[in-house]
Image (cartoon, rainbow, N blue to C red):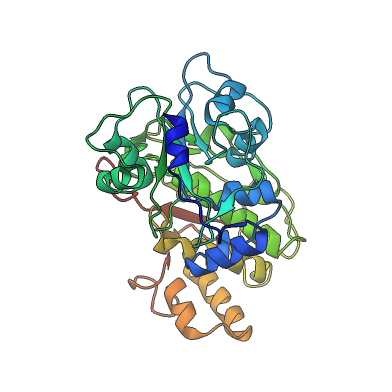
Length: 375
Ligand SMILES: [Zn+2]
């Protein structure tokens, strides 16, 4: 079955091996500039930029190597994708699995580029999966899945490999049903976890759970900001949600895995930071790095499951606005991002004033489309 599916795979002579440059061109053509268009190593670029991932919820007794084998990924790829430093994984945890090589035995070192510049996507059917569930996972229709794979009816077999139709929509590795209810009254199911990583400190590791979309975007945005400001100090990451969500001391929201508190960048790292948040002012902030961080988060607002709102004190918005104007950032750009100067209660911009948010950003992510339990 696997063979027959692969044999039907269309092969165009115009296909060329993917290079980082080709990837960039393809991404730009798809309108995926900015945050996502900076591949580092080829392996990492591949994992980061292939838009369709599989969510795997770790079952009892499963090891990382077994999961890697199941999906034909290397352990390293899965570690990098999920920010894991070792092989320790936890039952019930959701891992994002990038599309890896066919056959389950090797990583494809040279993915082929299609005309649109991206590799064809495949999904290996697991036990209990049906077409509509797979369609939901990848954000395509059942009809498209059938057409792409020459399937009539609904019968698919575990182990069978399906080609996934490409949609033009930008997608985070998407898991639906994690965020239940609202940020002020909700919970978290099959939580994804923001792992410790380079350039940031998790202040309270027991509060680093969220939706897969949140974890994905935070890693992308922080990584991209660091690349643009390599000399910046370590960034403080405050609370997300607890593993099962629900009320979290010190917060009214942060209950459903869609909120995260993130520190600011300073020209000189204040003592105590990043273990604690420190008040930002017009004179102590590293405006360039802080602005990049905000701008990159705001840029995800147009994507499914991207940023809904960023809370930040109005006076700090004023300072950032003035700095950005001096740098020549156009007012039209600033208007889309900052609430300043429309007034601290105005419905304008992605960044909104909120009292007591002068020492961190509070970033809230939208419910993913089609996630009915999330509100
Ligand atoms: Zn908060």
